[in-house]
Image (cartoon, rainbow, N blue to C red; front, side, top):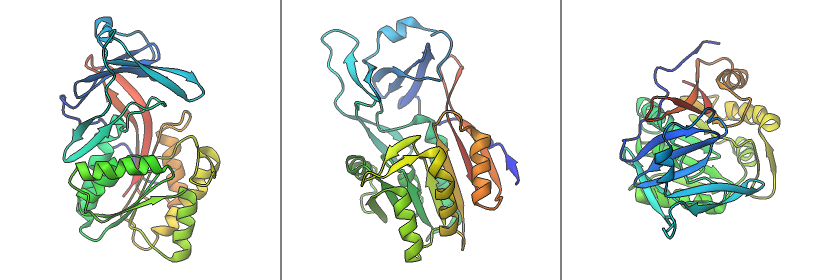
Length: 292
């Protein structure tokens, strides 16, 4: 396996769209447009650097039970933001405060979106991309905006609707995207039976989850076989594969090894996904591996 580090792994949002203001003590302080949010980040070790910034946050998220929690306004009598958006290049992403602490975007993925667009453009028109665990669609829109035909798969119907709104906001409502509400493993197996090939696959699997029909997903248990099936889907004319995750214990080397096992040692590169704070400190926010 040829394995190397990519030249650039840092996200590239315009400063007026997104900034990591500070992090520490298990939390991170971020600005999305004009909205400043304080939320948990297990990797945010060490002390915070600027306590005054934290006191001026718009809202703070606290976990209550399991993986759910609640947002509260930091400044008394202020209103929680209901819905707003950020832009990355030509992609517009709607943001919302969810009970899980998520907003609809993972800023550390921005460099991957740029890479997807570059790979699609290099492959030329007609490339067919499968996006699994596709969430609110930033990777889908990066591929579609560069000229790809995309099949977008997510098991949550409300998240699928969110992704379609992002497509409309980004001027890609008429792009060749199929929006599929289905379990990723089930869909890939069906595509193999149908004989539907793809040129590229994007995956950002969760650590644990349930499919549209209650199918249980455990990353450590199910990812290797899913990657093997994806390798079969792209065997005839593969352009690229991108795998990312936020699961503790699955770093760049582990993801690259899993890709290499499934895709016969194709040229791999891997890295931590990172976000740089205003102070210059770096917050590790997951890992990725990719081949081309």
